[in-house]
Every structure is written in structure tokens, then in C-alpha cells.
Amino acid sequence: MRPERIRRFFRIILPLLYQANLLDQGWLPVYFLGTEYEKILMPPRVHLSAADSFHVMAKPIGPVCNLDCTYCYYLEKEKLFPKGENFRMKPEVLESYIRQYIESQNSPEITFAWQGGEPTLLGVEYFQKVVELEKKYAGGRRVHNALQTNGTKLDREWCRFFREHGFLVGLSLDGPRSLHDTYRVDKGGKPTFERVMHGLSLLKKHRVDFNTLTVINASNVKHALKVYDFLRETGSGFLQFIPLVERQPTGPNAPLAPPPEDGQPAMPVTRWSVPAEAYGDFLITIFDQWVRRDVGKVFVQLFDVSLGIWSGAGAGLCVFQEDCGRALAIEHNGDLFSCDHFVYPKYHLGNILNASLGDLVNSERQTAFGQAKSRLLPKYCRECDVRFACNGECPKHRFIKTPDGEEGLNYLCPAYKKFFRHVDPLMKRMTALLHSGRAPAEIMRLIRE
Image (cartoon, rainbow, N blue to C red; front, side, top):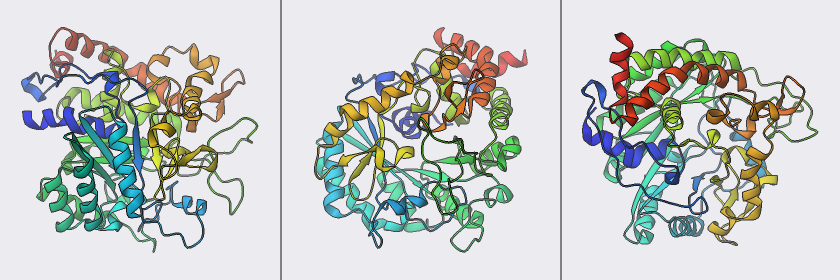
């Protein structure tokens, strides 16, 4: 991997991958570059207070998508809005959001993240307007963009646009054909793998920076190395694995179960949700391959986050932080919600056309939402030996009981216990390398000796 790409990774891509402006947590002072062990010095740290630093996931087309993935939790959000709703973010909402988001960030570099639904359905012209508005309000600061897509609508025009304006593209890809097509189908129930791979080939042809987002589900979790090796071979140097955990609806026509609350009846997970123990095995299998062969060549989000935690730099991902609430979601009409996974009426904070974005983000209500992550952590978790790394993970997944019967244990607890305990010895060794001014990629040689 070229030095200039590594520098771009730290300056732009890593914060985008982690979907949060968390510069106050700090970054590693050096990293690794393949087998050459070349040290890449970090740019100067930007210190932001927790009150200043936040991130918003923008949904400019709401939940509208050209696919009908079996496991998608966001398609049903259409029911939150009136029948016949136009799910295209209007010009006045778009401009207000871009202006307020830039004004609210106390940083020399601003990152926008665009998701859906499927944002490419808006057309290239829409995002040309986005770039124009960003330039209008940037005030001399650098603005970056990340866009998450299913890849089926990508063409030469899109890729030329992404390349020209430096967009980082997140591509949803669940593994090779048989695994990807298990759940990722279009409105007619037809497979999408061929269309996604065509989009991927165009991204590579036009030298667009991209990463892959892979939803780990009941099917592909059984094929860890098959998934990992396939993603490596596609040319994805930056991998995100997202565990699929959704609970079944309460009735035949009801939506998927909302985030857990006191007094809520126990509801089993959907058939496509990843089994917790199996997810831990999946991560361990890939880590054991990565740490012996690919450190500094392939960047796996969870492994990078783990190294940051062990080295004292802090968690670069909201789910592993002690508190949350600094990564929000904005819908097409300007409605702001506490989190992308909490887009429910109870977690609606207000509308940016009627209130300041910064005021909503820093409101008492949102602060309480974020602090509840640590405040409601069960005793079983507080006394756990890997709490420093896990912190109870995402509150959305805290719907089972601890062994002693306390509510609020994370469904994925067995996975993270198994994974964090497994990686602990090698994370300590990589941290020692890092703190001695050496490249953590040396771990590959040390393991072989």
C-alpha cells in the first residue's frame, strides 16, 4: 500500500469508516505499512470537547431503495411518514443541514456521510448541488464526503463524479455470490451480485476510494475465510463487518421490534440474525488469518478499533465507547433522531428547520440518551474483564438477561467476550511495539519466529 494512501487513510478515510468525528479520542501516533514497517506520522491532533464533536448520518432519500434485502431494518421507516410522502430532501432542508452542520463543527476538516435507502437514486445532479453548497459554507475548511451504496446503480458518470470530488464510497457486499444473494435481492426477489460487482469494477477503474460493508448474518457467518478472502481479492483494503441483530415483530403486520425498554416482552431474533457464539468464532477466524498475513495491508475496522483501545487511544467506534449519543441521524425532511438505529418517534429530537442542529445535538434529552449507555450497564457487565473494550456494545442489542437475571445484557456478549479475550495477548504485543516506536506490522514476523 502506497505511503500517500496510508496518509489519506488516517486523514480522511478512517474517520469516515468509523462514522464519527471523534478526534478528541486521539489517534495512534504511528501505524504500519506492510512488511516494510515504514512509520507514517500522524497529522497534528485536533482537540475537540465532547460537546463539540458529533456526527450525523444523513438520509436524503429517507428509506427509499431499489432493493428489498430480507434483513433491512430501514425500509419499514416509510411507515413513520404520511402516505404519498416525497422522500427527496428538499433544497431548503438540504441547504439548512449543510450550513448548520458545518457551522456546528469546531474542526478544520468536515465530514458528511450520506446513506439511505439508496442515495444514488437521487442522481448525480443532486450531489453536484451538495458539493456546491458545501463549498458555499465551508469558510476555508476542507470538506469530505462518504456515501454508502448498494452499488447496483453505479455507472461511469457516478464514478467520475466520485473521483473528481474525492468521495469515499462504502459498498455493501456480503461475500461471494452464493452468500451475497442469500438476502440481498431486488424488489422482484432477483439476485444482485452481478450488478454490485459491475459497480465495483467501475469504482476500481475510475480509482475511486472505497471500502466494503459486510453484514454478518445467519448464512455468511459460517464461512469466515471464504468471506474474508473474497473481499481481499476484490481489492477492498478497508473492511467493515456489521453483525445483524434484529428481533421479530410483535405481530404479523407489525414492524421489527424497537430498541429494548423496561417491561417489554421477550422477543426472539429473526431467522437471519447472526448467532452470537458464531459471530465470535467468525471474528476470531479472520483475526488469526489477518494477524499472520495482512497487518498493514488490509484494514479491518474492528481490529483497528481494538488496537486503539489497547494502546490507550480510546475507542474510535461509538458502540464500544462508555457513552454514546454523538452519532445521530437526520431524515429527508429535517427530522433529527438520536441514532441511526433509534429512528422511532420516541427518539425524535426535533427538526432543523425549527431548531438549531447544534442545540438539538447538545440538548439535555440527547445527553441523557448517550449517558444511559453506561448508567444502565448491568452489574454483570461492570465486573467483566473485557468491559474496557466492550462497554456493553450498542444499547439496541441489550435485550437479554444476565446469568443472575438482570435485564440489559447485550445479545452479542458471548461473541465479544470470546473475541476480546482471544486477541488480548497479540493486542498487548502490538501495543508494546507501537509504544516503543516500532510498527505493529512487525507482529507478523514475531509470530513466525
